[in-house]
Image 1 (cartoon, rainbow, N blue to C red):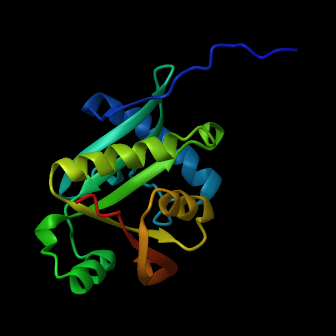
Image 2 (tube, rainbow, N blue to C red):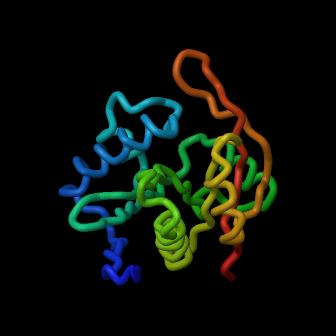
Length: 177
């Protein structure tokens, strides 16, 4: 049997305030499947808009949000200090890739990759180098970043909640210059 159902296209576009509720529902689904974010999602809509938010994107399929990514200004992340100490870069020239997730049932369709590429393009256009931290348990995310040329710049401890912590890796985006 041939499968010629026209593959529904996932669109990546800048997030609007109208997207927040559906992005929050997607986040809750991702958390129950993957345990991401480790902080939990008691306030999913607030979590989607970290302090210093510069830009955010959604992946949309048939009118529903199936993925999300954001860039925020540095606010004390260990990945930022690792990169600025190593590179001599000013933290003003650094953005933090954050809040990246894709619904489990959509994975394998390069949606995460498209979201990261949208963020990298924005960073390139705004003279920013991106850093992120990823939990060592999130193997598929690590493979995605490495495939896109991100470099590991160190091991860190992601701290959250009441004295909880989890091992993480810090990465920096490829140099586009």
